[in-house]
Length: 350
Length: 171
Image (cartoon, chains in turn yellow, orange):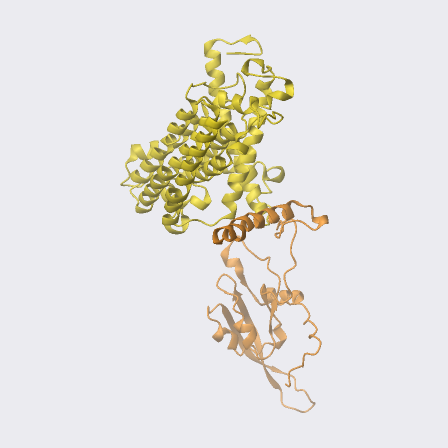
């Protein structure tokens, strides 16, 4: 890796990547919580939200974290203590290993797997394990029901998500996230390359299916049966307090950020700008300054996409368990299968 | 057909409502926007004139008849009194017996603001005041004695004008 023609030793690169990964997980989580959960939700309910801590309540999150860290670390008497303690960490770690494949610029990436999107989709289900064992080890019927619901839901919505991505993979002809970005920005639509070929336009059905599945994977509101507070107290999080609850909380919103990043890479052209604007043709032509501008573009796209996720979250009531399963198996999966067929046929024709 | 209609009327208009509220809240107050709430300690909303904030006592009107204390569902009114002889109204008359209040306390830690005492008082000694800021660090301080209840009288608003065309009661 040589950013700005400076050779960085291997330990330096590793350190940079660890720091970058932490920033890439925690910064979106903080941004999303303050911007959307605290402020946008309040505005949508015609109130102002936190206003006292810092200007416009911007330090509220610091205050909340401070409060959580002071709380007692409780565990139920009959809980499976060790597993109970590990569970939130597993959920958070799955976010970190997910962000590892997201490219932020031509050279600004953590790893560049050949089958990056395959890895991302595989790793995204690790958080289900964390949630399931959190529910199971709590020795609480509400937690157990919540964990089981979460497992059922996440497995049901994993399928349409994978199937929606296959359309993108067929069109790009690669599993590598970096090359999917290049394929979108170097591409052209019907001979016109002014915008590149963001798959948002040509894979619109896939995009919609992907975003709905992401909403369900993140257990955001229309699909938040696992933590349905009116019937399950707080689902698998019921017994968690203090900083373990905080870790669940961070992981939830960091996951929103990371999934928005992945959606931005797959459908909105990732870190790139249409290559035709600067006369670039392939990866090799991209200027070095994209390593700085690229992350900014990614963050912008992430904020736009997580705005949509949160907007839907604040607008809709919760689906019932059977409606939720029916929607995945009877609507999303057939639609995404159809999308794959149509994409494949069109790919052969053009 | 049904699905398309549901989609438009349910899902899209639902998103529209939240977005409209969002835009209205973000718009500056001068331009007709702003939130429905106020930032309480910094700005205050004037309570409605008939709000049930606190009960005020006009001591002169009270005859310590105990109707309020007996009708109180929470038993939060404490009354003690004694009889006194007052000078006669006309020269040469017998001295009058009047009831004097020794104690009239309302425990606002118990009060549930039902207003039955105000309703039941036959001598117009109890009034609703819209004042609401009297919380205390100690729960015992929520017991307001007759001096304090008398001070609340200053905050009792004038009766509003009757609506046009409304008839006064025959009594």
